Length: 372
Length: 219
Image (cartoon, rainbow over all chains, first blue to last red; front, side, top):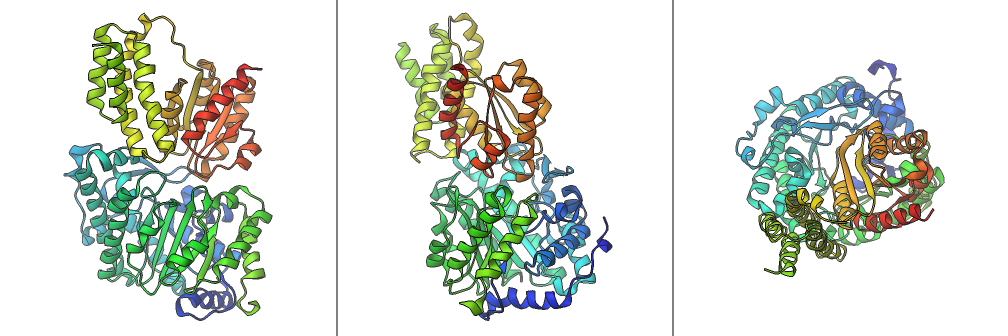
C-alpha cells in the first residue's frame, strides 16, 4: 500500500472537525463532543496493512491515520509514533518490528548498574542528525507538512519518563532499583529525562511549538506505593513538562495516566496545568476511572478525556461500547473546561471497526450541544 | 541451632527481600542436615506466603515481592541439589507459564509464577514471547495440569485462542486446564476462546490454580 492510495481529505469535514476540536480549548462549542479514541496503530489493519508497516513507514502510517480519523469522523490530528518507547533508541535500545505485533525491545540500552554511568545523553544537534526516534517523527511530520499542512500538529512525546527509563534496563530490574538502588534509579531516569528534553528541543527547533504528550504507566497503583509514585513519577513528570515548556513546546499538554491509578490519581495535581491541558486517567482498579471524580478534582483546570473501557472496545459488542460511551459523555459534558470522549487507553489495533463507529454514533446521539 | 530457628531465618530473609541473608540461612539448613524440601516449603515458602498475604492487604508492593522472590530463588538454587536425598515432597501439580508470542511484558507473569509457585505448584516458566509450539510441547513433556498464559497487548491476545486450539489438536486439552491473564483480558474474552479461568491479579491466580487443579483431579 502507498500513501497515494487514499482519497484526499475532505475540506468541509476538516473545517468542521477543526472547529469541533478547538471547542473545549477556546470555550466555544461547535456541534458535538469530540471523539478521540487515540487511534494509532489501528489505522494499519483498518486500511489493510501490517503493524510493522505502520511503525516502520512513517509516511504511510501518518496517511492512514489521517484517513481513519476522517472516515470514522474523529479529530483532525495526526497521532503517529514509531514506538511507545520514545527516545530510548537515542540511548542505544534496539527494537524488533514483527508483522503484526507492537514493537518489542530486542536489545536493552544497559544491562546493569555498571552501565548507567556510561550512558551518554545526546544533545539536540546530535538527535537531529542521528536520533532514530527523531528521524522517524521527522519523516512523518515532513510528509504531513508538505502534503497536508493544515493537519500538522507537531507532537512531542515526552511520555511516561519513568517507564521509558525502565525500558532501558528492563522493567522488573528497574522496579527493584526503586527500592534497593535508589540512586541508580534516579540517575537512569535523569538520563532518560535529559534525552527526552533534548529531543523536545530538536522538535521545537524544527517545527515550532508542539503538543506535549506525557503521563505515567509504571508509576501507578498496581506496581508502586504513593511515596514511590511521587518520587519516581510525579516529580519527574513535572520536571519534564516544565522543561518542555521552557524549550518552547506547548502550551497544549496531554496527560495520560495509563493503567490503574486508584490510589495515586490525586498526587498528579502537582504537575503543571497550562490553559490548554487535557487530563486523562485510565483505570480505577479494573474499571475505567470515574469521570465524576476527575471532574471534581481537575475539571476547573483541565479538559477531561475518556473514558470507555478499552477492554470492551476490543472484546465487547458494539451495543456495549455504545452504551458505555453514551454514559461517559452524559457525565463528561458537565466538565467546566470541556470534554473529549475516548477510550481509557490507546485504541487497540485490532478493535472491531464497528465499535469505533458505535462511539461516534453515541457522540452524535447524546453529545450534541444544541440538544442540551 | 534448631530447625525452627533456621526456618524462621529463611522465612524472615525472604520477607525482607535480603538475598545474601537468605543464602546464608539456606547454607545453614544444608549444613544442619535438615530436609532441603522442608527448608524450601516451610522456610522460603512460608516467607513467600507472608509476602503474598501482605501484598493482598496492600502492605507490600510489586518491587518488594520481586525482591523477596529473588531472595527465595537464591536460596532454592542452593537447596535444590539436596532435595533428591529427601523422602517425599511432591509438588501440588505442574504449571507451564509464559507470556505469549509477540509480547515481552512479563511482570504480571512473573508475579503469578512467584505466588502460585509459593503455594506449592511446580512452575515451568518458559519466559516471554513464547511460540504456541513451545507451549504445547512443554505441556506434554511435563504432563502439566495447568497452562498459564499472559499478555499485556491486545495484538497478541489471538495467540491465546490458538494455543487452546493447539492443545486440543495435540489431544491433551482434557488433561490440562488453561488460565489466562493480563490487563486487556476480560471474563468475556476468556469464555469466548474456551479458557478455563481468568482473574484480575496474581493473588487471585493462586486461588484459581488451586481450584482448577482440584477440578481436574476430581474428574
